[in-house]
Length: 71
Image 1 (tube, helix red, strand yellow):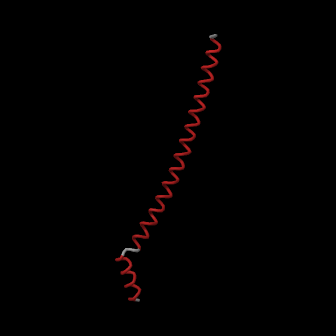
Image 2: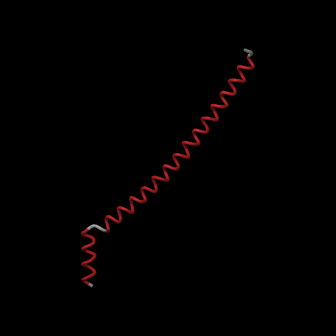
Image 3: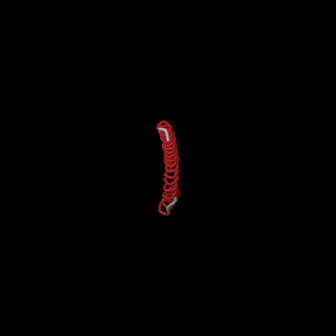
């Protein structure tokens, strides 16, 4: 093979691998951003559930009802 053909093929291989690496980095970044948004939503839901659970605890409900009747 001629030296120019080898250099051309190696250049094409390096360019293709660079494109693949950049595409994988972009895909990984997009995936991490989506996972971060999902985790924020899950944390918000868990905070809401925790607040509702705390407010609906029997001791809290009974004390609230007893305060209503005291007035």
